[in-house]
Image (cartoon, one colour):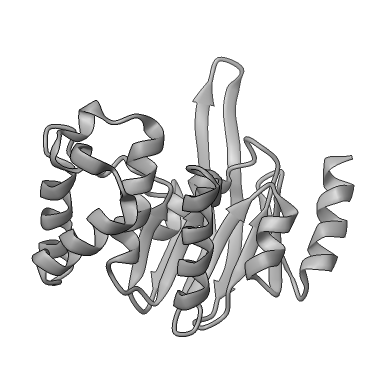
Length: 217
């Protein structure tokens, strides 16, 4: 379970503070995948980073039970000086996993060729995203946080992503942030809409889609 209580987050701009999360209160239960719709710039990625603990809210409390992934699609946690292999070994040790197994699984899934053994600073953004996805799939989490990762790579890699998600949903849940309704509909039965700093959860993706359309109008 993930619970947010009164979560507030803003960023300073030349025009003043930009509030992206304004007193967000929501509970994401275990074993239930939930989508989050929001326009570009609404704060979806910020919300996911706060849920993961990668970013700290200005106010409010985030409670996590179960093993929560980092945001899939976020590769900022990699050390650029280390190779893909070395980063995978490092993360495996942090999570108490067998390094050799995590490395083998990540190498096969990411399909980066010899780049897997090169410093991550030599990677393109797409290559970093592929490595981040592959590494997250090599470790079992109770809740996977997904940030538009299905748009990464060619059609063959996207199909690998889809199949991996389907397999994980048999024992884990997903929280997917997107502005793409078909992506959310593919994986989730319930959905929330983030608009003007407020997050509202709906019982169906259809209800959320209607609210999202009204907010975007």
